[in-house]
Picture 1 (cartoon, one colour):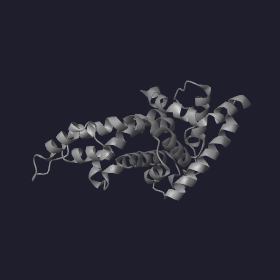
Picture 2 (cartoon, helix red, strand yellow):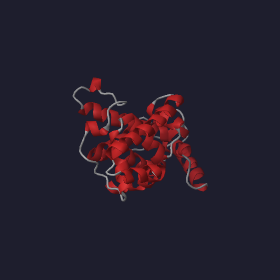
Picture 3 (spheres, helix red, strand yellow):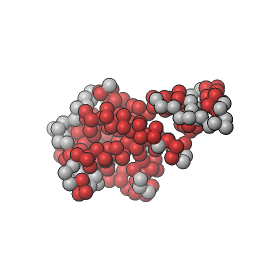
Picture 4 (cartoon, one colour):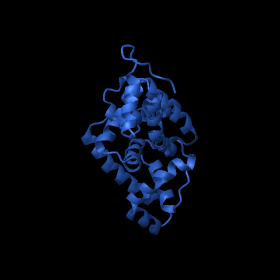
Amino acid sequence: MTAIKLDAARPDAAQELAESRYSCGMGTDADEVHAWRAGDEAAGEALFERYYDGVARFFYNKVGEQAADLIQRTFLACLEGLERLEDPERFRSYLFGIAHNQLRKFYRNKHRDAGKLDFNLTSVHDLAPTPSRLIANRQEERLLLEGLRRIPLDYQVALELFYWEGMSAAEIGEVVGIPLGTAKTRLRRARQLLRDELAQIAASPELLRTTLDGLDGWAQGLRAQVADSEG
């Protein structure tokens, strides 16, 4: 990992921050960002380890085998833009915002009419109709993964951040660059679109029923499996 240069006026800055961080155990995101900026490479590594699985989850059900490249691009852009992060406490939103931008850029570069591409209307299934490479344990989970891929990308992103990363509507709004009220509306609409899509693709009424009845639980259960499937 590339080191961030120390403040020449305070050559002991990194050491002081590192000692403070380790004396109280694992630091907060803000603690780690401050230490990283002061030149403590271990702090940067701690942040990458903390969020690698989450960034991996963000990409795996959307771009398949291209995920590894986009994960790398996301963390590189994170490093390059770190000094522009105004509020270190919002590091997670900053990082996932970069991932979101990388995802949109990926599909715009891949699409012939990028100017006409509307992620509020277009799904991953529309853009890449091959089945997901992810493997889920239960048929309800497999149905849910496919349903997520079939709703418009903007809505898929919102639901996966909510279920898999435990983000609030406010944080989702920060990630994708929309106001809180719009984020709340998007989440409500996303749930309805997902339910409608599941009804269209479920192999049986019973599978649809069990999936919908335990939707929150199935979504949470997929959290660890998504990264593990590609690990």
